[in-house]
Image 1: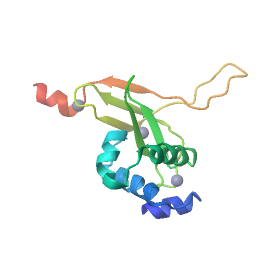
Image 2: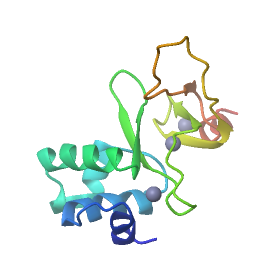
Image 3: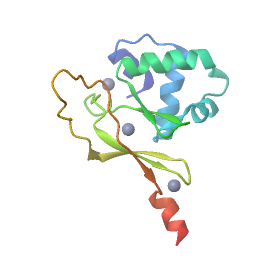
Amino acid sequence: MTASDILDHHQVKKTTPRVALIQAMQEARVPLSENEIKERMGELYDRATFYRSVQTLSSAGIIHRIVADNVMVKYALNNCENGHHHQVDHAHFFCRQCHHLYCLKSIKVQTLDLPSGFVDEEHDLVIRGICDQCNSQLK
Ligand SMILES: [Zn+2]
Ligand SMILES: [Zn+2]
Ligand SMILES: [Zn+2]
């Protein structure tokens, strides 16, 4: 799906920054931080627009936000290619060495059985450690 198809499908108005943001994420294929997105967007990046776009795209179910650690937030596309799967149902892995964040699609996060009256709006599982790439360089 192209970036503009995704926006159409979610009935989100097409704007140049939104299209550029989605394209940056499609090209990268891994979750990106604001700085990484900024580098990819070049002149199309604008701080205020970025925050608004990220808000719009996440409430529309197009992207998800991952808090990697105390200072780093990354963004990744949802699985719109595959039947619009918008629930963040997978774990994430943050490598402390190379600061890459991985969507571990094969590791499913279960729906939690909360006490009655509690409403789950967002829950994350972020595992922090050393990724396979960095690990193989250590040997
Ligand atoms: Zn979708
Ligand atoms: Zn690593
Ligand atoms: Zn993810």
